[in-house]
Image 1 (cartoon, rainbow, N blue to C red):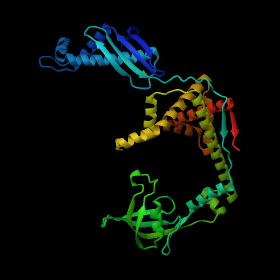
Image 2 (image 1 turned 180 degrees about the horizontal axis):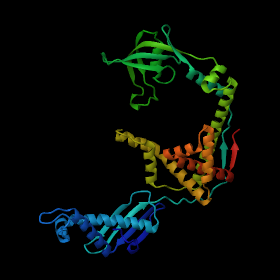
Image 3 (image 1 turned 45 degrees about the horizontal axis):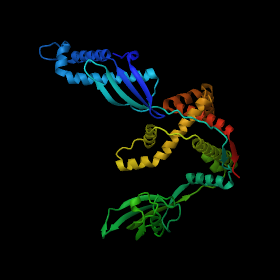
Image 4 (image 1 turned 90 degrees about the horizontal axis):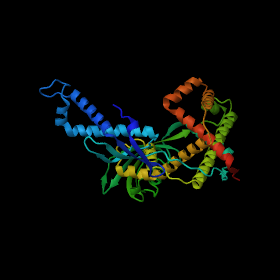
Length: 421
């Protein structure tokens, strides 16, 4: 039975910018109604000797299960009254309510206090008058050449070589045994490409000194930037055997390669496409840096705090499923992410507030146009794109991205954006 919200006495106190404390009082008659409802529910489920199932009198229920009946009534009344009070006062919490100071005597009113966090109301007094620098966007021939070399490598063929020592970018297969206190650990096999950072530098240097089939013993030292901090600077004795070596044969840089990697008519056409893509990437990166700078300037001019619960939620979302990771490592990761999380939360709240005050939105027509644009670029039906975006939850992200772009276009008009020299 729902509680009549109009009979509740609710006093709301603003503790901080994002905290609200509700003092809620439920009249005795409403508490009594809920207790009777709980008693009827218990009675309908009971089967006691001498009574038919569901026919146990309320007086017997009260006598046999008084404490449990009282607790169930209290829980139900508090839950229902809290929900109705939030609805009546139009409060939308972002965290679980913390209930305390529960006061109730049999046949009397029930009162309790609950504290919740709500989305903070951000006040933005200054929107513009800033100066932000846009990085230079220059795509040189060497940038295009690097991409072409990467494409050549992807089309290359690995050929075994039985003689000579391995060089940079050769693929090798090695057996490595740890030697410690005259005891040998189990031999382990590794496949890696030299020069790709897949092994520590001393191990790669040792492998380069061997010919196929050769074995050597080496003292290697773990570098100071090794991911495992406990191993940094440590030395270790290893026996390394070079099992085999492969070198990559790269295709010629010609029209045939262009056709193979993307059905381009010529190498010049491939170069032009690479240059265009790089230009777009750099322009997008430059725009992102301008946005980031504007956010920094806005937050400096309009400082505000955010609820810890919002930061925690962002951190948990960022880390995802931590599985069986040690609690100490999880806490360390959370601390490392916290500054980034706090800034991300502030950024989102700031953009939302600007969009609200300036009446900026991504309309359904604009979203449809964007879907159409994506469909044409990928040569698929717009309905298929829309359906996929809905199924994968990307539609909301698309709308958010479009809203943010419109907000930043507005913000750029309020400030001065200068190109780096």
